[in-house]
Length: 100
Image 1: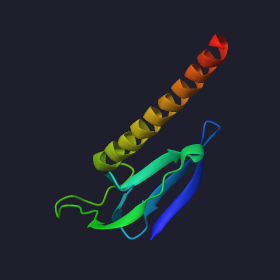
Image 2: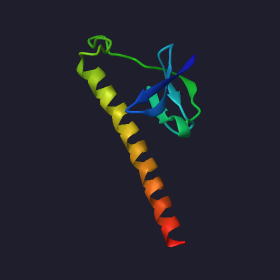
Image 3: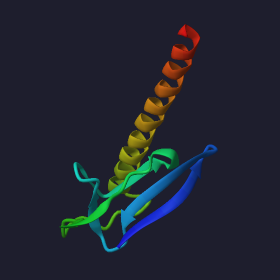
């Protein structure tokens, strides 16, 4: 089942979406293990039939494992990119108002 959680980071509202059954989720274009979107720009995700697998010699990621840290960095990178795009939209919107 798809789970969406509201989270706040540094005063900004986000929505974290993931599958509680261990499946990848998709926005119709890209497949994710989890997604974090600005609350003002929330996406709709569906659960795929692709199981998030771990190799037999790989432990399930824990907060101390490299796999977990890499996944967190990927999520944070996506979040940062979305924030930058949102900020650019605000800046360019302000520039357009000044030109009018």
